[in-house]
Length: 140
Image 1: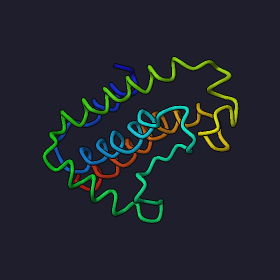
Image 2 (image 1 turned 45 degrees about the vertical axis):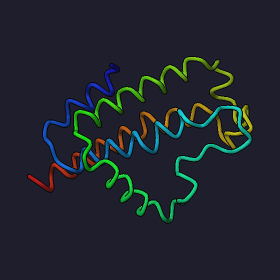
Image 3 (image 1 turned 90 degrees about the vertical axis):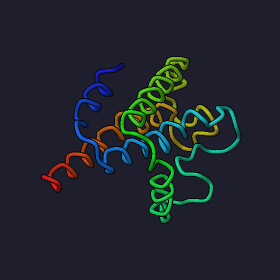
């Protein structure tokens, strides 16, 4: 387990809906979207399911919340850890040039593949930690 994930999981010391759902969002949307892109396809990577846009992602969050109502926090953490390992293994298979050359793969649109890996891991882990800290302040 990487230091980021270990730190992240140590920060969640209580059982409540917000951390579980935030972890589930990370797993369901971000890491799974990258894992399931089907590298080499003609379409651009999208973090959102086809039925949703950034304007309607609130409804998607509700669907994920419903889907994970019975997911224990320990399972949500394990799902995220496992998907993190898969994402890291995927990243290791690409060369520096493949990861960081913009438009190297047509399916990355106008960006580079490395940006997707950063977004699905470190950037969203930071976002998640902020959300959980905010929730912890609210619940005292």
